[in-house]
Image (tube, rainbow, N blue to C red; front, side):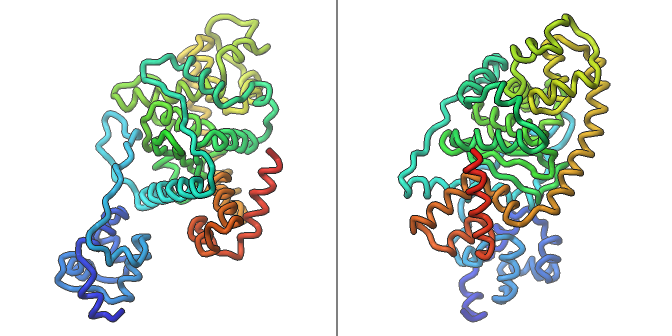
Length: 398
């Protein structure tokens, strides 16, 4: 294709659309592409056309296929995800290019997974759980645990930082939820989001978060799916007292998530809790023992004790401030460990085991090509053997 042909075919609306949907301001986009802002404006206004080299650079910056610039008109965009992070006194925020890209990736992988499941003859079951904001959180959590098929005895056997996360991920993926992760979005911007679909819904977790923090976010986003209220979340932001509709949803999702992870009857019957009545202060040793029993953070246990009338507001607020400060250190440690993880493990983590396994199955059954695998998993083919081995080891472990 010659430069003249590019001038004839590329439409200014496509250039503007690609930049805007990437979440880039004109100044940022022009700097990344390597042209002056005035030149970018000329492209988008149709007064000048980019060369092929410039167009390829723009495609790379906007994270779009080169061919998208030759469409007849900009593709239709999905409805933006609802933003549950904003507090009552905050103005609407702008989503970062990194977060917008992860939303596109999640939708793309879900579409690929749906097509592969259908082509391979696998069922795509619908999640049967339904809840409304006015439902009892404890009852909703009990129904969810029953459907997920997890017992407190099994939960108590999970040890360490990562085993609980791996176990909950495996359970949700087995029930038809696609779970992806990313380390490309700042933790300060997002801890998770969900794509609300009755069949093959999606949860994305921020891998920069501490493992047990991701467990809570996972259950928080799962509750959003049950409510049919997907969106972008930071479960640590809302307090216990909601002031807006969004905050009411966030508080409810936190309540249900906590009740799923720490069931009321199991907590109240625990030997540490059962002999005691009424609100009280708890030792660090007791809270840590309970946290290990349910494989959650101490803050989750503490909030459950407060909700169930076994501690005071003052003690909760004091300890929560302490735990949040420690939580930042745990998240930092998780990020440092992630920096040493082999690439194939990061690929399996970010794509999710179920999705990765599905892509490899489609390759094995000759439904897709090696080039498709590279595109669907976002990895070079030289890593394919390690990826397949990692998925196989996880499958054999349960």
